[in-house]
Image 1 (tube, rainbow, N blue to C red):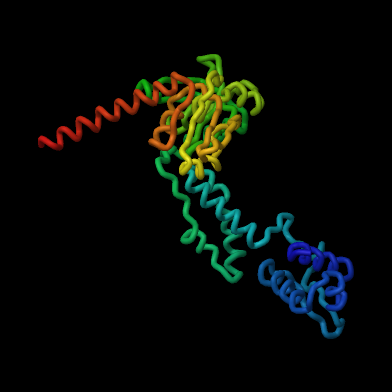
Image 2 (spheres, rainbow, N blue to C red; image 1 turned 120 degrees about the vertical axis):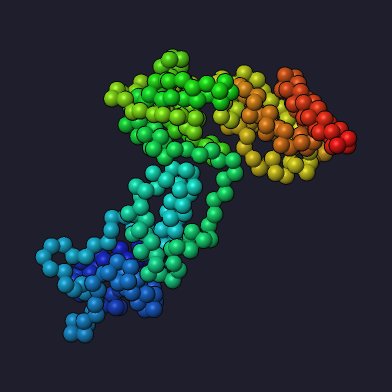
Length: 331
């Protein structure tokens, strides 16, 4: 029986019997007298439980209860480790660039902090000892994010002013947001676009203006949305039509073998220790970046189009650095 169970047991015995001697507690809880005394003190210090020992009655009982039900523990009871976990999640939420959401749980956070600060460690140490590092995270306007999240949950349409980075153009769209996705430190709204009459994935940081419309969104289940977005690689939506086949060096295989590149990937290790990874993809742009970061430790085996895209990028890089090197020699 863990401490949480013991505390609930103590409360139940006191409510049922009124006065309970220590021997009965030790028998029911199956603990030592020292552990029992710590549990009683824990209830007093953490939850202001009005438990006292009565020499006259020769037992423990609740006092100063007045009219109504006796002392009761909160419906949601958390251990110290669970409280730490929740506070860590709040810090993570702040780091996601959605401070407006974090503000809604601030009252709970204050209560959790107050409980922990009565213990042996201060809760504010979490701020100093736990870090969330998110390189290349794109900034999101909290107001926009909250409106998008509200519309997604309440099933409302959105009018958005969306900036497309690839074309450097901005356009108004009406969408029915279905699922909010957090991917590689950035938020995306998987939505049904009424102009395109199909599903699209919108980067939240590219939404310049947003308005929640007083009109119900077109209804799809999360499963239908995910299926419609497709099984493409990474953030690029679409139906996967090609299979990538990559071969990693023996050294790099130690890391890649522990990674999941795609939900439908397959892999095997060759006799020389190199690692072969295969998975479907729809668009090579993000995949190209992931391949290039491994440099000479990865080789594209298939398809030919992906291999050609990698070779073209390497040639463009060689030209860039070749020119830079030549200029530095003569400067």
